[in-house]
Image: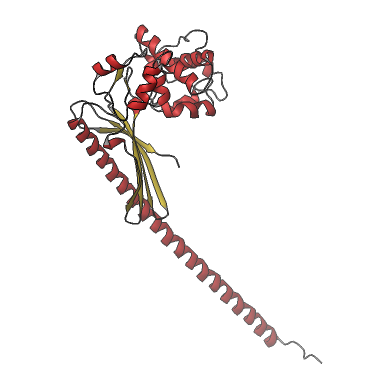
Length: 314
């Protein structure tokens, strides 16, 4: 026969449950504190690695500026065989690896050239862009002409559409959501995604060949131009241009006179020297990654300077 429950027995039961509950809570709290400590340690470690990565990236930037300065002091032309043009795919450092490459942005077609106020020059810039557009597979001749007009209207200062295919602010205000045209030169090639008729597919085809440099009328360096940019300098690429494309690594042109005697181009201006470069740098430190792009300007007779920096995509 089970003995009857007394108040004392009930109290002992409650005390036992309470003790078990206290122990459970204490155990959970201890585990939570341990996890919180681990998270804090990991976060602190990540911050340290990230800060270290930023310092390495700054060092890479200064290193590259020195290389460009020395190059300008020892050579009057730029080519793909010079030290600055060699990518660094793997450079071991304490607790990680550095990567980087320097790209000659004047080996590409400057989108802001389409804002030229010189009618004759604009005709040639339009022709160069349209041939490039077709050559990379972005569209037909008709679509290329339309895109050139749309880009010009995006960056010119007026509100008059260019021809039948242009698009000024009134058209963009009818989009959903509506937005305005900047009516100034592009500051980043990503602005292309906002212009009428641009798609992600077309953008990816154009992006390797079209920067947005902070000037109108920049020259194309024939020694460093991407193949489509070089071939689209003329209406019909012939063996002369194709031959130079194959030989320029061994025999880059060293002055403008050499261009005039070796090549016939329809799209001005062209050169053998460059002033605008983009550094793509990346630091992989521990579990952290820091990536930046650096727009570098190297004026004639003066040290290089960084015009802009931004996060480099994964």
